[in-house]
Structures are given as structure tokens and as C-alpha cells.
Length: 262
Image 1: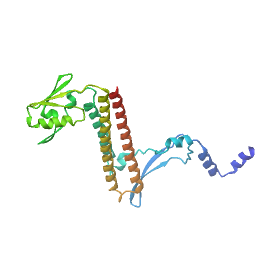
Image 2: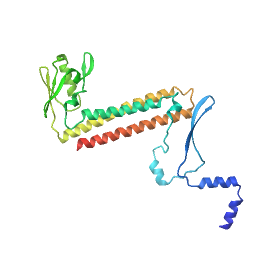
Image 3: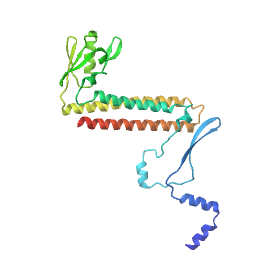
Image 4: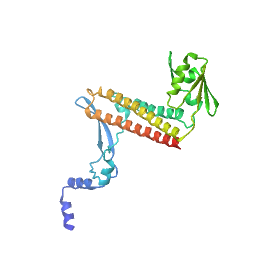
């Protein structure tokens, strides 16, 4: 042991420092972002503040298998001349808000007059919300009435829209008065609403993919003026934002499913 310590002291001081840094446990690595120009290209580089070596355990490797170990957190102001990340983030958030609004207004155990308000009706003047062309009221706990006296020419279109709303409604017409019986709350009805919730969530994910694709296409337009490393870094940030949004959509679906099934 004494001989080993003596040999260690004989090493060059710089080499001793390197060995010490290599074997020293590190609980956190500081990441910094620098902005520099190389060969006429802007580049944003992430690097560790100190030279360290990480030795992953089998458990850590298994946990991280198939997933990126490092999350990107780009300062939006540094890349605003390439792409507006804040705008992309807002577009992704709007997808979540649209799904939440859909869940609250159309997927409820007990149908209410308010759940019919925003049903889109195809008219000669374009798509209009049902409450814009008809007066909606609750006749009884089992019946909703839609009075189409102000727009009698839209009655047939309104009936079609109600039937195709996905709320399991079968309207009946008496002149310009549409009678909408409220379905009985059965297990089958609850499961049907859950199925609709999943369909609406998938549509939301389709909208999210469009937002992500549009952002990636905008980014590719800068490939001639921005370094490849920077492009890849921003691409990773956008993909990470999209993945986070998918997780949030799935979370809202899980909450709604639990609510509907009771």
C-alpha cells in the first residue's frame, strides 16, 4: 500500500489531477450553451463544465433503454432568427386546450343543452354552431328541445349534425321543433363515450403531428445558413416538446376515461 502511494506521488501533477477527476463521483454536470460562428455558420454547442466519466449501471441502462438520457432546453431567444419556439409551444398547447374543451362540452355522462351548443351545422352560409341557428332548451331531464323557427331551412341539416355528433343522440322532428331524447346512462353508453374520447384524443395527436411537421419544415429552410449541429439540436427540442404534449394528451384521456366509467 505504501509503495502504491509513493508511486502515485511520483506521477506528474497534471496526470494525478486527471486521474482524480476521472474517478471522482460526480452528482451533477453543469451544461452551458455557447454561441459561436464556424465557417460562416451559427452554432449552439452544449458541453460539460468539467471533464467527467459516467459509468452506467445495468439498472440505469435498462431504465433508459429506448429513451434519450439528455433533455434539451434551448433558450428560444438564441434561435429566434431560425424558428419561433415559443410560437410552436403555443400551437402545441392549443391542441391540448382544444381536447379539454371537447371533453368538457361533448363527453359527459348526462347530456345537457350546453353540450349541443357547438355542434357544427352545414348551412348555405357555411358551418354554423347549432346555438346560432336554433334555440336550445331542456324540456325535462330526459328531453332537450331545439327550436328552428328562426332558420327553418336549416332544420334537416341540424338533425343530421346532431345524429353525427358522436353523442349517441337520435333526434326527432315536429315541424321546426327538434326533440332530442337523452340516452339512459348505461354501461354501454359509458363505454361508447370512452371510445369517443379515445377517437378525439387520436385526432388531437394528428393535429399535433401537423404542428411538429410544420415546425420541422420551417427549420429545414435554414439549413443553408445554420450549422447541422444547430439544426439537430433544435429538431431535438421540437421533438421533445411534441413528446411532452402527447404525454399530456394521454393524461387527460386517462382522467376522462376514469370519470366516464365511474
